[in-house]
Amino acid sequence: MKYALSVAFVLALAGACTTPAIGTKHLPYTNPIPEAVPYIGYHEQTHRKELKDLVGVDPVYTQWCAAFVNAVLYESNIENNEAHAYPLTARSFLDWGFEVKSPIPGDIVVFPRGRQAWQGHVGFYLKTVIINDQEYYLILGGNQNNEVSIKTYLADRAISIRRQSEAKFI
Image (cartoon, rainbow, N blue to C red; front, side, top):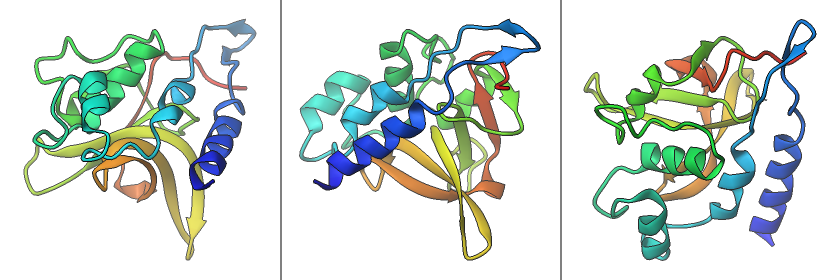
């Protein structure tokens, strides 16, 4: 039941914004969230084979957040980041798409992690929430507590928000 409600909530968010435009010219935009939703709750231990087949690495031994984003982009027929020199690093997405200031559902958000400059975390933006007067992003991502889940991250910790095209929603 918990996952059914999550799926319904996420799909409602995913459908909220689907027609981007710049001025009056509409540009194609594919929201990758519907492809990610079925994996919510997949844990790297209990769904190891399924995740390994999806992301192409063993999730028990490899940090797999970037691999999950790449796999979802691929399943959504969106150019992913696998051609990057370091496609399994979250910060490789700093070179993907276009940087934007205000996220919309389906954008990719990169966060810092650890103490090394190359370390990070990456996932799909769902929405902004305010908790105790702090702005947070709800992120659907892989390798969040060793599973595909929705988790809150402080918005001001985001290194970059990336979009597949320069399309803007009106």
